[in-house]
Length: 355
Image 1 (tube, helix red, strand yellow):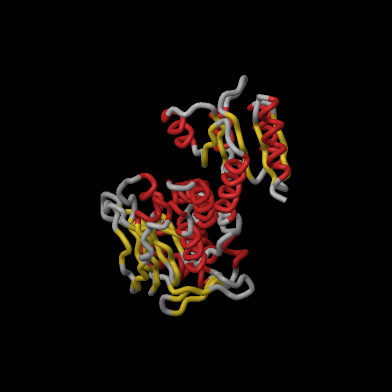
Image 2 (cartoon, rainbow, N blue to C red):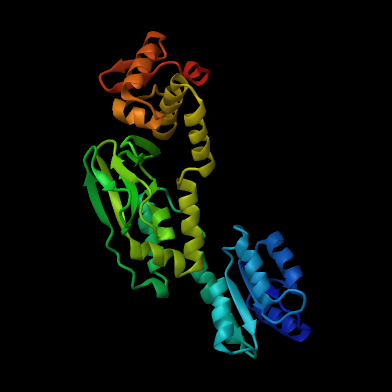
C-alpha cells in the first residue's frame, strides 16, 4: 500500500482529501502545518507528498525547499494544493522542484489521477541501476519512457580508444559524458614546465567528464587511455535533459554518479601525500592505489603493465627516480618486475613504508 503524506492547515479540506485517498486504498498520514509536515516526511518517508501552499508558520514553498535539501526526502514526488492560479505561483513552485499542481476546489478523479500519474512516474526510478552500460541504457530508456523525455536522442556512440588515445584535452569544451565499458583511463594536468600530473584513475563502470558538463566549463584536465578501451559517449543534451527536466531522473542519476565517482576527500589526501611524503612512500602508495582501483579479485596477486612515465606522473617526480625506487623495492622483495609489468608481492610491506 502506497503511503501519502497530506499537509493541509484547513481541517475540512484535510479530512475530505484524506478520505478520498483512503477510499482509493492509499495509506494517508496528515499534518496540520508545514513544520509538522517536514518532521513527518523525514520520519515516515512517504511515497508521495501533497501539500497546501498557503499555511501559517511554514508555507508550502518552505516545506518543499527544506525537503529538497535533504538527499533522503528530495526524491519524494511533491504535489502542491493551491487556490491561486497566477503564473508566478506555478513558476515559483516548479523552480523549487514541485512535480504537479492541483487547484482548489478539485474533483475526486482529478486528485486520484494526479496521484496515480506521479506514483507511476516515480516508480520507474525506485530500482537501482547496475554500474555498467546496460544499467546506463536501462536508466536512459526509463527516462525516455516519461512523456517529457520522449524527444531525447537515443544515439549513444561507442568508441574504441587505443592505448594513449585521448578522450579529451584540458581546455576543450565538453560535448559528451564518457562512460567506460572496457579498459582503463587516466586524467592528468600539465604544469607550466610541461610536466604531467595524474589526477585520476578510472576503470570499467566509471563516468568521466560530468563535472565540466554540470558547471558548463572547459575540461580542467585531459583524459587518455592507459590501455585499449571501449567508451560510450552520451550526448551532452541527453545528460543535461536527464538531470534538469525531471526530479526523479535528477535524483537517481546523481546518486549513480556519486556512487561511481571518486571521493573528493580522498583526492585532497592524495595531494597532501604528494606534497609531504618521501618518493619511496609516494611510489608505494601509487602502487597500492593502482591495486585498489583496478584489482577485480582481492584473492589474486595484483599485476599490471604501467609505463614508468605514467607512474612518475602519479607520484609527481622524475621518471628516473621512479625507476630507481622500483629497483629498490624489487631488491627488498616488495615487488617483481618483468618489462613494464609490476607484480605486488608484499602488500603489508608497501603499506608500512614510512620513508
